[in-house]
Structures are given as structure tokens and as C-alpha cells.
Image (cartoon, rainbow, N blue to C red; front, side, top):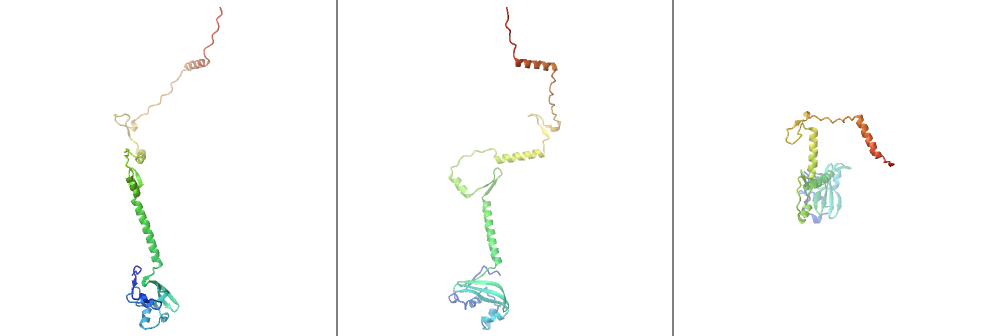
Length: 238
């Protein structure tokens, strides 16, 4: 069972807690952190000193650190030889209350869950301010904006037949559809029946009229005369 979320305390022991009595306090039968199959229980039943723990093999509890009268740290370890032990868990006693110290995996898992919860809450709050309408697109609508709009005097807005977003998007869609599906019938004049595009004949462009060489010369002479002006009049002699 995961014991990281619980604590245990016996208020009758708090006034007499010290380096010599803290292990006896920890070995109380009502303490959920204490393993009754440990070597400490064997030494206690046989009325031996704690020095005999070094000569035994198995699970044992030792006082790792003490700062009287407020803080004590007890370690649970697996002894394999008089000089070799494997730490299993640490417990700290603060003002008589016993807690289990979390391992590194539990600390990292808790920090990651806290960060993910904060990020998820931020995204959910941001999504609550997001609005969408087919004619306007996306925009942000904050609570402060609602209060400002309430305080401002309301002005009548002119209703436009369509917005810029609608016109731009509709024009792009119509152009795309026209390119994919070109028209097959054309109505040349209003009221007439539509005519297939294939039957419409293009009128030939009028060819430039041929001008006779005599007419060209006459036009040329007229232009030169107009440029020189009329001939001067001579005085008439009597």
C-alpha cells in the first residue's frame, strides 16, 4: 500500500521523545509504518541491545539523524552483512508526527502532474474566451471586455449585407468552382434561351479596307499643301 498520504502520531510520547526513546516510539504496534517482522522486534523480544542488529541479516530500523526535540529521521534498510546494507525507505518525525519520505520517482511524478494540471487549466481557460462565427471568423472575448461594453454607451451599428470575410471567401470559392467546372451554356441577352458554348461563333474581325494608290496620292498632296499654306498674291501692274 502507498503510505505517502498518511501520517501517525501518539500524543502521549511527544513530551519524552529523545534519541533513546524515538525507536521505541516508532515501534508502537498502532504505527502503520512499522514492520513487526523486522530484526528490531526480535531484539526487543529477546531484550538485547541494538548493537546486535549489526550481527543479524534482514530488515531493520535505525536512527539516521536527530535534531532534538523537533526532528528525527529513521531509515528502514535491508542488512546483508555487518558492513553491507540496502536502504529501503526513510521516515521523518516532526513534532511527534511520523511521515514517510517520498522517493525520487514519486517526487518527479507529483511535479509533472502538477505542471500538466496547470497547463491544462490554462488551455481550458483560453478556450473559454475563444469565439467563432461564420461571418466574422475567430476572435477573443474576455470578461473585462464585457464590463467595458456595459459601461460604454450603446451606438447603433449599421447592418451591412455582408462582411469582408464573407466577400473574400465567397469570391475565392466561386473562382475555384468556375475553374474546376467551366460553364456549358451562355445567355447572351436577358430573356433569351441559354445557348451552348460550343455553338457560339466568333465574328471575324473586319479587314482593313484597301485604299487605291490614286487616293493615297491625293491625300498626300492635300496634307503637304496644308502644311505649306496658300501661295502669296502678286501685285497687279496697270
